[in-house]
Amino acid sequence: MRHRLRPLEIAVVICGLGLALVGLVSLGAGRDQLTASDDGSTTSPSQPSSGQVSVAIVDFAFAPADLSVTAGSTITWTNDDAFAHSVVSDGDGPLVSDDLTEGRSYEHTFDQPGTYAYICGIHNSMTGTVTVVTP
Amino acid sequence: MTASGTLSPNSAYAVGHLRTVIAVLLLISGGIHLRLYHDGYRDVPDIRLGRSFLLDAIAAGLLAVAVMVWRNRLTLLAAAALSVGSLAAFALSRTDQGIFGFSESGLQPSPEATVALIAEMAALAVIVWLLVRGERMMLAESP
Image (tube, each protein chain N blue to C red):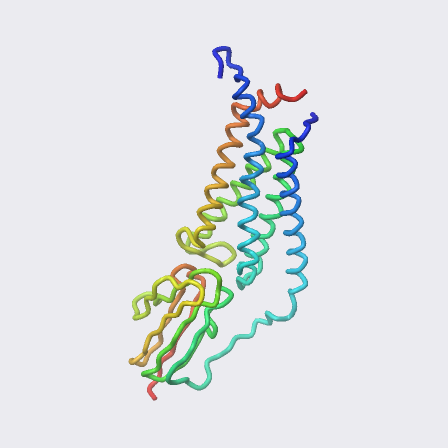
């Protein structure tokens, strides 16, 4: 069954082809980037940090995800992603940020030793842990 | 619709353009998925999530073309399947287990999630209408 395409329909067809083409090119580029960057290694907490400590929110993950600090330290989370994230305690806990759009930060001072698990309230697959030790 | 059950000329004209509407809605949804992929979803730790966004965009582009060029039921059904799949994936990503280990809450990212949802639901509604009521008119429209 033949149908003569009108100009608007031709424009839609061109856009569709363009979208598919850009997608296919992106797919190829993505494969090129699949190198040994994800070797499964994790950064383990080493010496506890103290004072002002920064955690980046980038690529849908907290970096570093696991952190050890001394009591009295202040941790600042800064969202470097283009999408909103938040920092909230996993269960009961002191962390409760607003939604952080790109570039916004949230900070909290940990006075009590303990282990504080937290997640992104928007993407709960994003997890992190702060371990607070006595100085 | 006339008393005899056939569509009036104005309605027939509108029905003839519904495939264009479906194609545009597919392009909107696919374009949003492509943009989200480039804006950061490609960096989600499980690469399958980003890939699924990309494949959604590619499929939407190809189906937008197919819906316009091949005016048969199969292309409509394929477009419906993509819309249903996208909506199902969205719903799955709002559960605790998520999709590919990734979960998201509410209508985030905003406003992309809302726009894509509306486009996919609208596309599905138009496709169902075309399959159920408008197909006879589509056939009559063809030379």
